[in-house]
Every structure is written in structure tokens, then in C-alpha cells.
Length: 451
Ligand SMILES: Cc1ncc(COP(=O)(O)O)c(C=O)c1O
Image 1 (tube, rainbow, N blue to C red):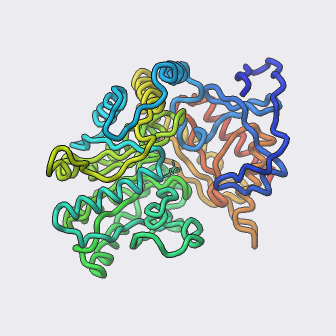
Image 2: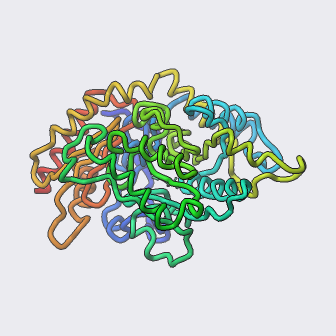
Image 3: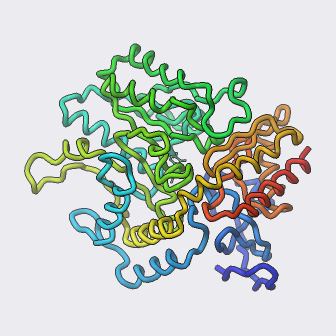
């Protein structure tokens, strides 16, 4: 890995791999990638560097995770120091101090009595863990019949068998057989006819939460363990919860004794201007799944924050017994804990969550300024997240989006995320107003070039 090179300084030559074949890339069009690779070799603050020395402005916080910006010295130093001090500590029956410190810090950031943190290594593991805790909780409470889950169409909850069951993306599930938990799906909250070009939470759509009543009527509440939603669906194109929707869902879950799980893998740690989106909406779920931003993407980590009564329900029986038969070798890995503590300190020192809220209006102005460009059919923004929907090319859904990613990366020096034919933008929270303008200009130029 080369050093990051400041703009204007000639880059050192970077060794590029001579064979791209062996690596089967995740969620990637492998054959297209290997014909025209997008290789990243360095990163600092708001920029990536390519092997040929180009500076690429990061419009996607890596993959929704690098909230504090790249290569931040306190995080780098914390990881380096931890690697020298202790590389690994078994998390089963042993612990290391930073795991406890980080859990306390996260619990302090979370709303209400969400006071206990179970560490995992990714968002997918966080979702599957929350689902298992929900099942085990009901069983411990004498309600073992509560086995079903409710997710939402166009939800994304990672790729574990639990996550693909509650997720509402057919492509992520249909190739993988029938071995998933039973799940029903609320309708998507997105409706272009009612919500096009929304800034923030759309005014239309709170009533869509009421569909939960029909699902309960179909199966009976006594068979349903939990409802899981993203407060803002990120991976399927930045679909903000309509005004009042999450409050309504909370009330219905209370009415029927269903646990409410917020999947905040994307919205956690500042994306919507608060530590957690739950705080933006004043809605307290039973569990919050997090990952990504907890370490600002520097070391894999995820987790589930659990309300006090749920946690306490497990703390029964003989004290020498394991209370929850669940965990991962790398839960609370020392490097991740060190990175997490450093990231949270940076968020606080630089007030980055509030910064996201402050920048929300300028970010919205910049993206909505692209309205009217060729093939743009909708634009949505909330917090420091936004999506620009492009009309699909006839008979080739996803192609225009893919071409937008190629055009932005290879010719406009900006990294974006795509979701089908949507361009998704979610820069690090350190982005400046000028850089927001630069990202929007570059994306706009790419959209015009594709017309
Ligand atoms: C809401 C949500 N849940 C879960 C996941 C899965 O996280 P991971 O890729 O770390 O397993 C993601 C990833 O983007 C996500 O956006």
C-alpha cells in the first residue's frame, strides 16, 4: 500500500496486481470490473488515491462507513498502539478493558434504556444476532410461539440467513433456497407519485405502517417476534421514513407485544445528524443494530444495543452458566475496540453528528440542483445522504447506473455508490460545503455525459 500523495505531488509507482482472476469480489459485476478495474491504493480525509495517482473525492464514505474521513491520525494511532499492546483476547469467558469502555460509550450515546451492547463483526451479524436475541427473549418469557419476523419491501439487512429473510430485496434471497426464518414484509415507504423530489422525511406515507395490522391479523400477534426496519433505507436508494411513520410503527408494536428493531447500520453514528436515527424521530426501539461508522470503517465491527429489560430477562439461572449461546471469535476484537474508541472520540471532538445536521440543507440544495438533467426522474435527500434516480435504459435495467459509476470514477474523479439505476451519495461527515458542491458538479457532469 502506497502512502497517500498530496494533490500536485508526483505519485510513487504502485504495484498493481498482475492477475485479477482469483479474487471473487462481493456484490460486484466481476467480469465487467476485471475488464476495467477500479483499484484504490490509498486514502486520506476526503480522498482516495488510484494506482495511477489520481485523487478521487469520496462521495460514499467508502461504503457508508468512513464517517470521520480516511486515515485519521487518532484512529490510525489507536490501531497501531493496540496491535503492539495486545493483538487478540478471547471474548468467550474473558474480556479486555477497551471492550467494556466501548460498550459503555455506545450505551451512553444510545437513547432511553438501550444500555447493553453485544459486539459482532458486521452489519449482517448484527441483524442475525438481534433476531436471535428476539427469539430467545420470547422463549425465556414463556412466549416461544413468537417465531415470525416482519421486515419491509426494499429493506436491506445484510446477507445472513436472518437478514435476507427480513430484507426486501428479491435478488438477495431467491438464489438461496427456502432455509430462512419465516418473514412477512411491510410495503415499501417509497411512492414516487406521492413523494418525488422530497427533502427530508416525505409528508405522505405514515399510514403504510398500518399494514402491520393486516400481518398481525393474518398470523396472530402471538406468532410474531419482532419488526425490523431501517429508519432510512440506504442500500435501496435513500428512502426516508415518512413523517410519523416510525412513531406509528412503535405504537403498533406496543399494542401487539412485538419487539421493534432499528437496523441503524447506515444511520448510526451521525448520518442523519444524530448519534442514532432513533433520536431524530424520538422513537426508542428494543434493539438497535449498528456497524460501519462505529470504527469509521477502519476495522470491521458491529453490534446490537439492547434495552435493559430484554438484557435482564437473560440474567437468570445459575451464575456459572452461559446466558446466551451466541457470539463470534472476533466479537469485541481489541483492534476494533481501539478503533471504535478513537472514532467515537473524534466524532465528539469535532462534533461531527451536529455537523451532518448543519450541512443537511446545503447538501439537499446541491443535489436537488441536479433536477432537470437528462434522465433524472427523482432526487431524495435526508441528513448527509441522497439519491438521484436515473431512468433505466430500455431493456437494460441497472445499465445506466453502472455506466454512471464508471463515468464518475474513471473520468470525473468522484466515487459514488449505485443502487440499480440510482446514484447514491453519502460523503464522510467531514465534507466541506465546497466539496459538496464539487461532488454535485462532478455527478451532474457525468449524468450529462451519459445522456
Ligand atoms: C441497514 C443495513 N443492515 C445491514 C447491512 C449489512 O452490513 P455488512 O455488509 O457489514 O454485513 C448493511 C450494509 O450496507 C446495511 O445497510
